[in-house]
Length: 284
Image (cartoon, rainbow, N blue to C red; front, side, top):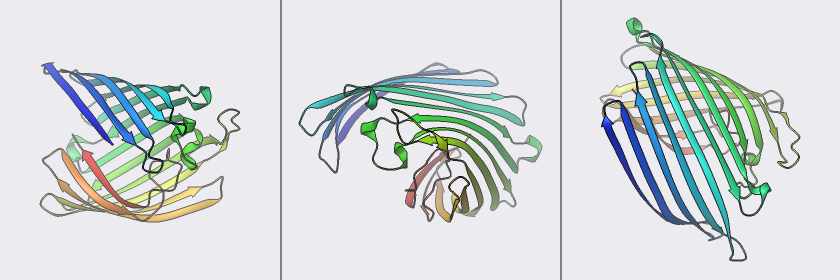
């Protein structure tokens, strides 16, 4: 399909930025050839204090989807996005975000959707020893997927999860950086959205990684991963490799291959992540 996008960003003063955007277009399902007519509008605002940065956004979207009988079903969606960063000391920062969306369908309540993601992180990077980076992060995740936007995969589950994670990165030399991640999901999922019968879906994730800055503006990434699903009495292991190119001091783009079928994001319940990927990374 084809979607036309337009937007304007205004910075009236150094600490304040405002933005509006509009998307209009038609998409086509590659399997059924059903058309989806989309209209979306959004507004965003951000403000930076001396130690505190705030950002919020609101988006409204209308999708008209062609049905098998050539009629159209209408879906309206609201998305609220909020984030903040607060510098406690030169070494410690608190970061967070809160995203929430609701959607209603003309097909009835069983086709409505609901999504909430709340994240609170605590980042440590000592000024006098900036070779070390540590991030502690807590995530609350709730997802009630709409019946007509999912297929017969794990993504159709109703999910509510509490996830704790810690990431550690250490610059061993100017060329080598070593890292590790541990995450735990205390989660529940249900198959039926009408009368949900939740059952436990807890998991442990372990990741070891190495970054090699082998030449100017080029990095190589290597990871080994293990996912333990305690309630299912199952475990999965795999590896990931990537190649990144720095574009300036604050942005890099990479391409890689995930040899495992799971994600390092424990809110993702499906096992369809094996294969090539493209990743964009921004840093401050």
